[in-house]
Amino acid sequence: MSRVALVTGASRGIGYAVAKTLVSAGMEVLGTATSEEGAGAISEALGGAGKGYVLNVQEKSSVVDFFETIAEYHSPPLILVNNAGITRDSLAIRMKDDDWEEVIQTNLSSIYRVTKNCLRGMMKARWGRIINVSSVVSRIGNAGQTNYAASKAGIEAYSRSLALELASRGITVNSVAPGFIETDLTQDIVEKQSETMLSRVPLGRFGNVQEVAALVDFLASDKAGYITGETVHINGGMYMN
Image (cartoon, rainbow, N blue to C red; front, top):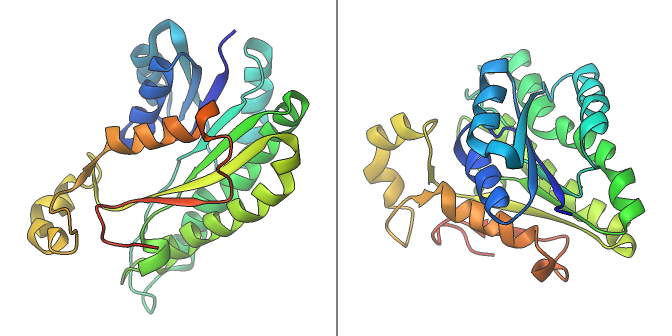
C-alpha cells in the first residue's frame, strides 16, 4: 500500500513539481489549492494517483474541514510538505499591518495548524516525514521582505524544535530553503533583474522547480531516515552554512 503524501500549495511552482515527483515515486498525493479551479487542475495533473482539494491554510475552520474530509477517503498522511506561502513586499516603514499578519498567518501559523493535524497518524505509524519549505532570505535577509523573512526564519526554528519532539517516534522534520528558483511567480522579477540576481549566484544560473522537488523527494524517502532538524539549502552557492 502506497504512503499518502500531503502537499500544500500544489497548484503551481514548487508545490506542483513536488506533487508530481512524489506521485512518480509511488505515493498517493493529496495536493491543496485555494480555489476549486486549482484543486481540479491538481486532480487532473496527478491522475488516479492523487487528488486536489481546496484549503485555505490561513483559516482554522478550513483546516479542520479539510482533514475531516480527507479522513473519509484516504489513509492518514505520513508525508507532509508544507509549501503554501505568499509574499506581501514593502519596506518596513510603509508596511501595512494586514500585510504583516497575512504573511505570518499563511507562511508560518498555517504550518502549526496543518502539521498538528497530521501528527496523530504519524505517531501511530511510528514513521513520518515533515518537510517545510523555507527560503534563503531566512538567513541573508532581503530589503522589503521583513515579513516574509521573519516567517521563513520561524519555519526553520519550528522545524528544529519539532524534530526534537518527534525523533523518538521515527518522524523526521526538515526544512528546504530554495534560493532563486524559476517559477511563474518569479518570471517577471527574473526578466527585470536577472543580471543583478545572477551576480549573487556562484553557479551562474537560476534553479528550477524539479531540482527542489528532487530534494524534497529524497527527504521524504526511507533513505533520509537519519536526517532531522536540518535546513537544507538549495541556492546555487549564494548562501553557504
